Image (cartoon, rainbow, N blue to C red):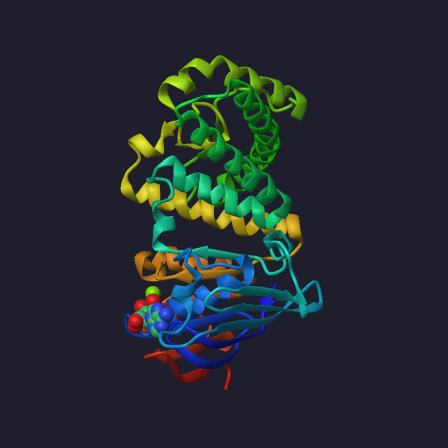
Amino acid sequence: MRLRNLQLVNFRNYNNLHLEFNEKVNLLVGKNGQGKTNIVESIYMLSFGKSFRTNKDRELIKFDTENLYVGGNFSKHNTNGLIEVAIGKNKKGIKVNKIHIQKIQELLGNLNVVIFSPEDLRLVKEGPKERRAFIDKEISQIMPKYYNYLTSYNKILFQKNKLLKSNYIDEALLDVYDESLAQYGSYIYILRRDFIKKIANISIELHKKLTNNIEDLSITYKNQINVSDEDTVSTIYTRFLEKLVSSRKHDIETRTTRYGIHKDDLNIFINDLDVRLYGSQGQQRTASISLKLSEIELINKEVGEYPVLILDDVFSELDETRQRLLVSNLSVVQMFITTAEISHKNIFDKENTTIFNIDKGQVINIENGGN
Ligand SMILES: Nc1ncnc2c1ncn2[C@@H]1O[C@H](COP(=O)(O)OP(=O)(O)O)[C@@H](O)[C@H]1O
Ligand SMILES: [Mg+2]
């Protein structure tokens, strides 16, 4: 998968920008605060329809202007596509191949993007919430209907918790909510279980590579219902509902929902020790890298093409050995790398690299590899 070009109008600190990208490595170089991340943020928008930095779309509109536009041509499976996002003060429109989409899942999966930022290096160290967000984003990309299930689940959970906090609790309504939670929860559970199994298989190999065969990384699904790998959606539904019913009294007392997929997490072990508790900072970071890189491989397996990879400010956080490992492992992937340090240039094969020098919301100079 390749993003061929990008057009920005009134996006963050850019007035009007058109860039043609290298199909291999694109280095976005500039001092802090110049607009490097803004560019990758707009690329991310083409994949997910929203920013990874804010939920408030209006923050993306250039100060003192009214409407923004982000557009990009991509190619995938030998076909071309165009994604366009337009945002005004109170309106937002997304088009795929000139046709307005109605729901975000019609956008997801068109252009697959994996972003790796400094927070991702803390993926293993952080709390369950961050790891759930990781899982959710990845599955949504591969299987947009997952996003549907999740949104529905979260809406019902919100309604249920609101009811639990109200003065009068209608238990018949709680029954309805619990049944819906069990239903969506079981769909989500199955997709998470499959995803985690796949990602675990890929990451064990990658992690060996990154650690010179010293470490065995094991990733498993941590959830509250303990069903087996073979269990079907109906068994899981029943199990969830039992849990919810058994916890009814507790839920009413604590005014919140104790059981469900909103509590899930990953168990991450290296050589049989829980990395979160016993791993060194370096081990936690390397495990995070393995996990993130597995995602790229998994998308390739599921979609049949590698996603576009964004490395936002992580490059300088890696030592040179890991930088080289990363680059050599990912030579088939189109990359967008932001960095303040021009010295990293040497890691990349010049032939396949385009360098965009960025200063105050302008691309002031483009160095094209090979000429
Ligand atoms: N809506 C906006 N309108 C104009 N400028 C903005 C807007 N949002 C952010 N900026 C500017 O963008 C710059 C930060 O860009 P960013 O891409 O995050 O920098 P970096 O190069 O460090 O990654 C800041 O100078 C900020 O003032
Ligand atoms: Mg930045």
